[in-house]
Length: 172
Length: 173
Image (cartoon, rainbow over all chains, first blue to last red; front, top):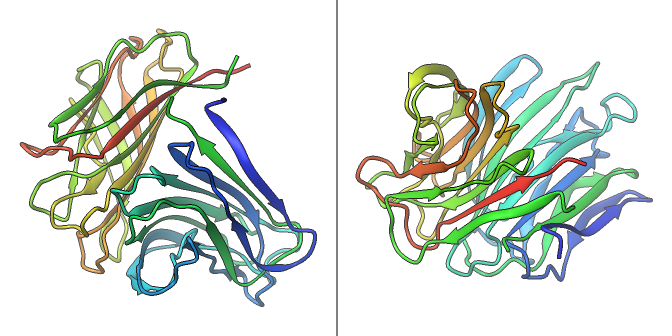
């Protein structure tokens, strides 16, 4: 088995509210999602979220540090949420046409039933006429259940042409 | 040839003050270290100490956040890079931080050794300094090849059971 393998890729031929990777095998040590996405929300940016194993409730916390246009900030206001605010941003419908944001999401030790699931994600877009952004975000799913599915919710609609690939990284 | 090879992997079966990978072969182009760790100190989030070859003369430039205002800083002349944090004893139970370190051209003997680090210390808290994010550009000011990597816990603290350390060798075509 190769150390890094593509588990699944979803390329959207039509707008979709969410993308879900399910049936994730437990044969890897770490997971990584690489995505190119755009939201249909009437905004320069969209706010995607992650949900694991179909579990909503109040188990999620999120933190981030960001630069929106020329202004840096960080956000620690999110605990007790129904989903994880990572990656922090994607592009929205009023961004430059055909401008898709990119993001890399790392989910380490996802199959370890002794650990809650934590995530770190970097995302950004150098939008030319709207609000460019770059973000480094983290999230906590206060649940030790092995991760078998990941839902990337657009909180609007992922635009046609968005692409999501889930990789598995082995440790032996 | 596979692009990624596992050089070393360890899941701790008990608490240890330090993790080291020794005798790193020079046969790869780059190194990638992935860490999922927690420490047993009395704080919510504490830093750990990254070194290669047990050497001195490290520098770094970093962007961090643990409050509503990000901060940037730089340091030079230290014998470690200590910007990366993990959750500690007061953080949400069973929560481990994520650290990723990319070291390009680690075996070359012509240039200093740069490294890019990302670290996220999560906690179900909105309180300042009870969580930490860090992006770090590190540099070991040496032309020697990297043959070992060490991550030390903060002070007299320890990395706890179930912390994992995975070192990959990355090969170009």
